[in-house]
Length: 527
Image (cartoon, rainbow, N blue to C red; front, top):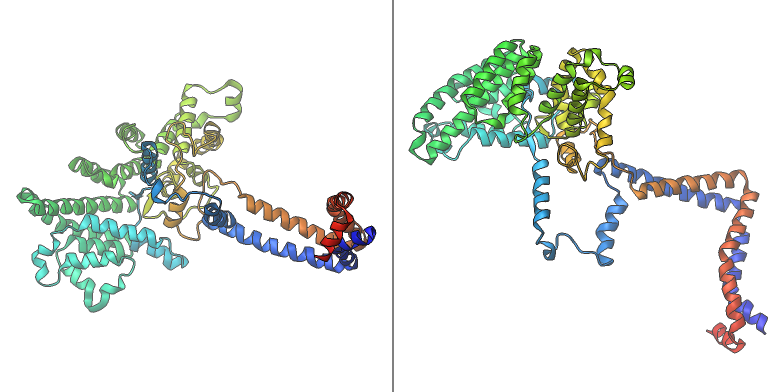
């Protein structure tokens, strides 16, 4: 009776063993193959999601859905709305670090960006970037008192410009009913700016239109300058006219630079900086640095750096890498890594290496473009400081200057990677600058076109679930292959594995059977 009760109690296990014994090797092949296929599909999706969004889908879903069930607290809840002063300062710092800036060397929309699109069929600018440009134009070229102008009686050109900039990237809306003709006839400086930026297909055409804009802009500037103290509205108009005039002169200087009249461009930039020293938002000194490097006027470059490479002023890749280039120029022609390793670095070489390390810490993406380890694209109209977009904008215009200095790229190639040994945890602690911001990848993906592979620093470690699914896929695929090739041997291994797996359960059942009375077993079997 005892044996019968035991057999009845463990009959489910017996049925399971009988079922497993009847399975053929084809079943195991199908099972392991299906598992490998499913895990492979999960791996592909996880990898795609990680490359696109920088995080694991399974991990993201687990955190967002399982954390509340496990007692986690939502960071956005009102109970956590009050933060410490340190957290507030940190968040403000992150916001300022992720601010995008107008590219001071941005190309011309019609004469350069559109020509690239005509040739390659690719769009070099993103909608986000163009929308930021539209917002900049509205900020610089319009004011609240525009509707009070006399031109409002007929076709208000300022209103046309406002609408045009709101719909920037879609100039066909103004071609209806001679829209561009209306703008061109009017003596509106911003109308000529729009034509020069959007419609001019060559730099020569753009320069002609900017010269016409300069005439109209100077008239408006002198008129508003005389009445700027007559009220807030007149002051706003004068501020707007000042921005328009500075923008026109800066773009004219850039036209001269692109047409080979570099000395003329340098003079225009210097005059502009003397006339409007407080308008630092245009970063005209970066245009001046690039033009001086083209003239190989390194003493003048050093003088500009002495003024703008100050601890109290915001840094940029142009400032840091130009300073590194000047110090590298003093030693690069005679620099030899073999000789330096034998005798050590002298003072000048040490200064050059430290300047390179400083520049690389500020923006670690630049060296790969300067060393042509990564292909360049057209720079965006806005850049994120310390991001890939700023690196592209700098290398696009300054690569030729590094090539012109003999040995500079060789020195950069030998020393730039040493920066990362000085800052092993760049997101937590910096060496000469603040810790590297964690928001650069997201902002750069919005600023740079889809066909460009965004450079990410520091390289993100693969999430656990990608490694897990990769291991699971490989293991099940190997089992499927072995089962297909050696069915009998794998069958023996499978039975041995299952026997080992159920051995603890059999042991527990035997112990329970020896302890409990047979009458209780009888009642359990009846249940």
